[in-house]
Length: 229
Image (cartoon, rainbow, N blue to C red; front, side):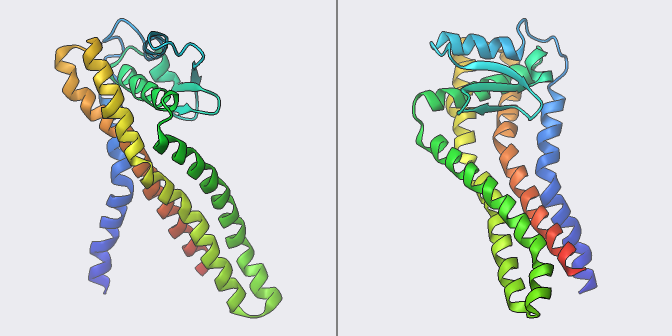
């Protein structure tokens, strides 16, 4: 059993942290040189939106990570990608504009993702509350059954986050390869030698949510370890 754990634990750590590490490494690798292109990520996003008549969609700097906010109708880029002229900056900007185009076209999977995210956010908060309440409920009732029910409900609600991140993958892949890559190629926005590298960046942008899903599962495992103490 000990030998099995020695093998399984490193594999679990690799499976959990590996995708996130790969995403970060890919983005960082192509963030230099920071002046590879004439325009910044923010400028390209604004240009692509204006070109499609989407003047009402804002382009903003954020500290919350690159994303498109359908409620605020805003493409939000990290400070580095907004101001940088690197391959990563312009490629990520195109990816987020891809989401804005999905929204404008009424892309159904994007709408579904928005609903799921709202449900998952509430479910995660509820799950954390219920798992914190387990010791109190067990003491009050002096019976393990209510505590076990709370534990099950808490795990299920927190697991919603992991599920949401996984089911949004098709939406991310469409933004990367159904929208952003054709835009970049048809517009000739990148140097010819950069398209294969842009493909890696777009793949990393799409798989960001897979990495977050694995981290959500790790969060559940951390709660279980906490409750066993």
